[in-house]
Image (cartoon, rainbow, N blue to C red):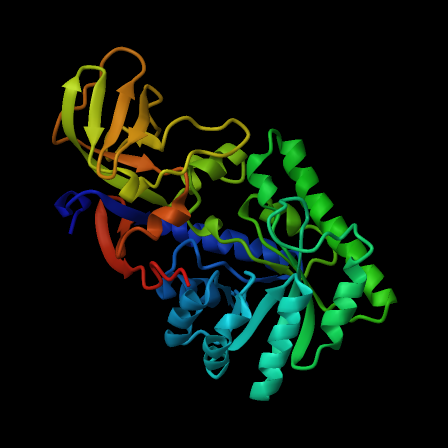
Length: 374
């Protein structure tokens, strides 16, 4: 089957680029002496995760229990949840622990205590890592506060829990303004974690793992001493924002959306059949924030995006493209490819993606963990 035989909009995955991305990140982690634990939130596909594990990944990371349940059903046995799972989900987590080695994160004393009580009641032991805020200011303990080491000491002493180490996510790396700033984010993250780990060890707390997770900084983090694990997710597909950050090139981007021009109300405006339900409403991030809701390749064989075409606004099913200079040759019925701003959300919006080589469809990959948000 050819891609032109498919209805649109359609999410396409370039197999060659996907494979190259998997191999490149695994090589970087192995060379750095650390394990790679890909975050599956980007692809939500057991098929893709198996390719990652086959290439050398030590296990996987999932955002929510629902995702982890899908991957456990598919046979994955080492799953980390780098998300503050609430103890109200203890029954589901305990059931999951019967099928896989599970680890979670904690960053609050009451939550850690509740997990301890749940594990004691069930006669189980749960691996936990303490989430550390390294500058993104979302979740995690502040490593600069005097309470940081006492919190680690408290968690390490809780029965039913086994403290594995520290875990962080430098999400601020997606909003840097220069390569030097990106390098500083990776270095500062590693130094904060190293310092906290050293302080904890002096207090008698074992810290066996230091896990970091961000595609933007992954290649830089892979060269940092004492880091034991990388957890990037987006690297498997990349997207327009990662290109703007500088962590990928256009040639690395494996995911695109094939769309059809469905209307041309004026020479300087066309409408695509990919709206917010396909491209998402995420705007671009990066050193120079990309404008619009994706980069338009004006033709299925185009090698570079047409910078004169700006996806200026989205309705649920409409992508309104404004022509910035002159007129466009595109007419209703023509097909284009769009490089989305954020590939992780795009793959969660479809039931399946098409694996392609050039213009040939070679496989269909179900997005099995789609919509698993609890």
